[in-house]
Length: 121
Image (cartoon, rainbow, N blue to C red; front, side, top):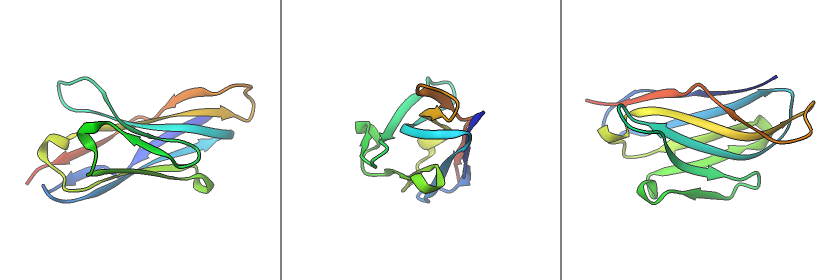
């Protein structure tokens, strides 16, 4: 069994910063791309960016400059750092990853349950 768990969300004041984690656990063989998404109230889920197994990152234009994605392969964990938080960053943040379990012969996409970030004074 493979699980992804996001953590690090909470209530943050505007202008603050936050680091979210996406931790994979279970019978992990290897992890390829990790993706971060967010879903604001009443809106569709949107892609924020990605990080490859080698650490190469890519972001959608709307978040460039304030969002930083990274990963620690030894810890099977990816991170999303958000700076200069704005009320419009309020959303549930999700990660997914292409993971090949030890018992599996191919990569599958696994999703976490999400972590809520609320930006408010």
